[in-house]
Amino acid sequence: MSMSVALMTDKYELTMLDAALAHGSAHRTCVFEVFTRRLPSWRRYGVVAGTGRFLEALNHFHFTKAHIDMLHADGALSDTTLDYLANYRFTGTISGYAEGEIYFPHSPVLTVEGTFAEAVLLETLVLSILNYDSAVASAASRMTAAAHGRPCLEMGSRRAHEEAAVAAARAAIIAGFSGTSNLEAGYRYGVPTIGTSAHAFTLLHDTEEEAFAAQVAALGTGTTLLVDTYDVTQGVTTAIKVAGTSLGAVRLDSGDLGAQAHTVREQLDRLGAHNTTIIVTSDLDEYAIAGLQAAPVDGYGVGTKVVTGSGSATSSMVYKLVARENSAGIMEPVAKASTSKSSIGGRKTGARLLIDNEAREEVVLVGERDATTAWLSTHPDYRPLEHTFVDGGTVDPQWTGREGLDRAVARHAASRAELNPHALRLQSGDLAVDTTMLPVGNL
Image (cartoon, rainbow, N blue to C red; front, side):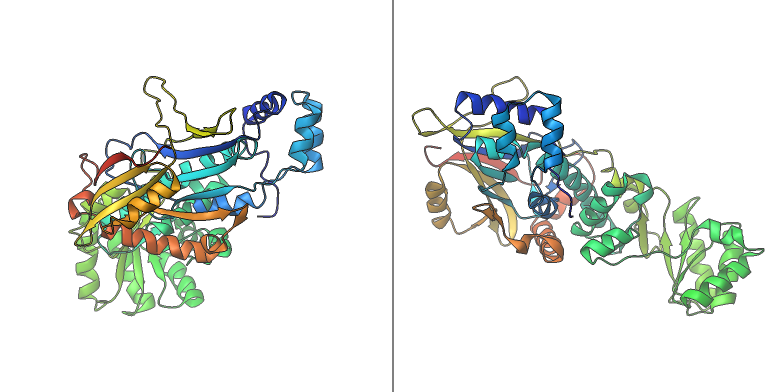
């Protein structure tokens, strides 16, 4: 990312800054927290994703001369505010759950600490990234859990905004997908890319056999041939005739995938193609994947449902002020009391109780850093969930780029492995673990 992202925000963040600068309260120390009040009713846990992308974007959050000129022409901001924006750089601290971590309602997913002026401007950037990426990762995790070790492949780029497609591919990889069809995601993050041919390639040629021969000549016998353009049974016969019994895979993209998979497996085995695998696509989601568990399917290509969050395109995360320095210079908790939209005041950190390596409880500690650190030191069975990503405005590079993505993949696999197997069921039910708020200090 080379361009500035400072205008990828909502105007009210700048007008709040303008009023706070005029009032003299803009430079009070504040603590903002990212959390969600609820999960979709059919999900038992969420997956944090997008942290690495946010940290990469933070390095490009600065206002250019062109931005300042536009804001000046708009006329809503004072010269004092425009001067502040022209020199803006975040110098605070950002911490939170590691990318790939499991989260629950009221988990303090991300904490931003700095002056009000610095921190308030980041709200939209934080939420636009974490809300989408976490929604995709949460859906993708259910899909890979339902697949029980069979590979899931992300191929939803054509169903999303071009930049969302890249973000979705990255988020799906975090949650266990094996590869993506999106080349930009492969370029940016070094993830495996997949793809062979569509029905158009078969239709281009005079015969299906001619199309298969052209593909095998170009890509080798290890390729995947799409066998349902015309007749599946004939397509499989032609595929093995052209590629031989060393054909890598056949793909099914329509009809009753379960029934077809059984028929095709029997046919492949009769033809001697025992090692040729079967890949299925066609508007799959976690329920369809689970429904194919008994079928001889070797991998799943998932598109629309994963890039749209499989029924929940946002994680409903919010960015709320939970503590601030008062006029006397003393930090104090603050909370929103609005009906159905309340927040809980005070700085928070999360920890998860592990018994025999199984997650039994999540505790959200409310209090000063010293108090939460002391509590954790006396409760070794609780795994601390908070990590520091930004210190004094400097982003720790281990959480970004390919290294950050690899960390997120590993973190998700380890976190999900801590859950009771019942937590992976697709039916609506209780959250995977109970969450408890525990005051441990003054803030």
